[in-house]
Length: 214
Ligand code: DC
Image (cartoon, rainbow, N blue to C red; front, top):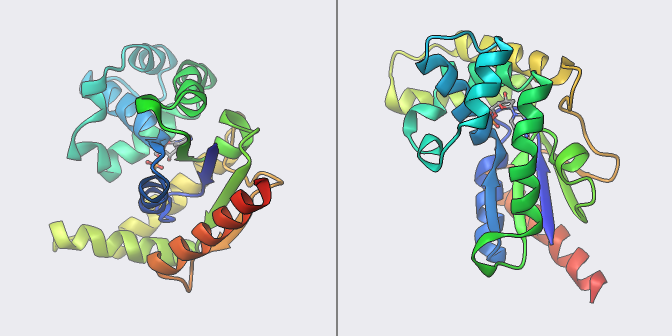
C-alpha cells in the first residue's frame, strides 16, 4: 500500500504524513528532505544551487547522515532545495530511492506514506490513495511564522510570506514534475481545519478505501 501526500510548502503535509504512517504502522519518507539535503550540501560547498554540476554531484553523494539535522529545516535551505529541485537530472538521481522505498518499505512494513510535490503524479502515480493538501499562502505563512517565532522572536511575517510565494512560484512553474494535483487525488483545503481535523478526514478516507478493498 502506498499513500501519497502532496502539497505546497508549509501546507502541513509533513506532520500529517508522519501521523498517518504511525497510525497505519507504515514506513514514512519526507521526500522534501532529499532535496533539502542536496541543497544544503551545495550551499556547504559554496556553490550555487542552480549550478547543475554541483547539484547533481551533491544528490549522487547523499548519505544517511546528510538527512539529519535541524538546519535542514531553515528557510535558506528550503529555498536552495526548491532551486536544486528544478534541475531535471537532480530529480532523476533521487527518483530510484523514493520509488524503491515506496514499493519495498524497510522493516517489513506493509506500506509506505510519502509526502512531497510529485508523489501522486511522478514518483508513485500508481498509488491507490492520494491526497493533495492546500491552504492559502497567507494561512501557510501565518503557521510558518508562528513556528519560527517560537525559536526566533525577531522573525518577520512579510519575509516568510514573500519566501513562500517565491517557493510556490518556483515549485509550480518548473518544467519537470511541477507541483500539481494528480487527477485521482483527494483535495483537502486546510484553511479552516486544524491538524487534528485534517488527520481525521484523511484517516476516514483511508479506512473507506481499505474497507472497499476487502
Ligand atoms: O516539502 P519541503 O518544503 O521540505 O520541500 C523542499 C523543496 O524541495 C520544495 O520547495 C520543492 C522540493 N521538492 C520537490 O521538488 N519534490 C518533492 N517531492 C519534494 C520536495
